[in-house]
Image 1 (tube, one colour):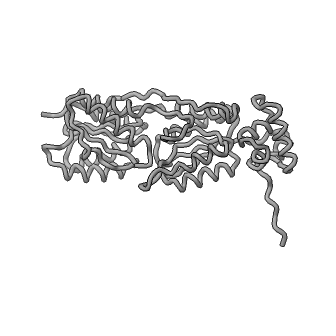
Image 2 (cartoon, rainbow, N blue to C red):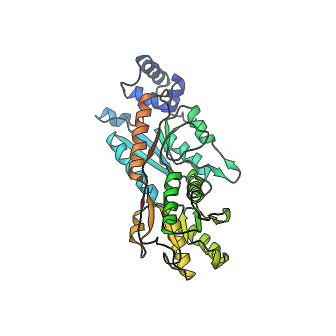
Image 3 (spheres, rainbow, N blue to C red):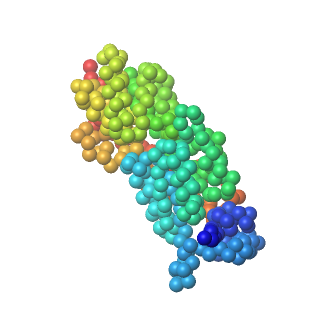
Length: 349
């Protein structure tokens, strides 16, 4: 039985012409941002390979080829990412791109598969919340592979050693503001329930609490950095273990958390241990997801403008796809703000 021939893809055309996939897409869509010589080279490559866009039939009927942006998130059950997706999708729709979303669930191998899948679906560029790696160290090969192949991408978390465009908030400053709020209320023993090792935000937020403690009389030893994760159960289990083990005289009275889901888990653990929020322990979350304002004890949290972040990142990616490989990386840090609610108060006597 004869073997079916593989249909040439946009990636094949880009490789044949010696340009990035985004440039090839722009040339085939008659973008004014592509130089005439480059466009001619891409068109010649498409003709040589007998390339036919996936949506060519629709285009012949008066439509146009579908263009796509890929977004790789890390946790599909975290409301934080719902805001990112909504912001990015609004911009994608405006520019007539389809937004394709995949989740790595914090696994670098799954991240690599997600990137490969989105490229197979002809995504013209990628938005990434990158995974640092596992206990063996960060695996940056997916990012370097994208750079090597000229695929435009924008990060939503910084990765040390990878020069790439970034849209984020200043997590160090934001976490510092959360801890400074507790210090201003009179708390002198602080703890931080930390996030997953695969997130840059985890390390930045610990650093922010350390900055606030070092500039005050507050005690924040390394033992008060409590490893947890990114989910409700992570915060609950970590807080149960820690507060059951620590003597009452050494108990932190002010706790900052990696995110709001972790903070909700922490509050449940404290309640089960007979500790009141905020009378015995004040708790601060991060992200300010909608749930935070609707808890029995509304949660003080750092509000992250996730919708604006997703939109800004998508706009930046669209601009980079039009500009081609020569565009230098850009760094955009949006403003986070502390929203004070009932979960924080001065420590009781």
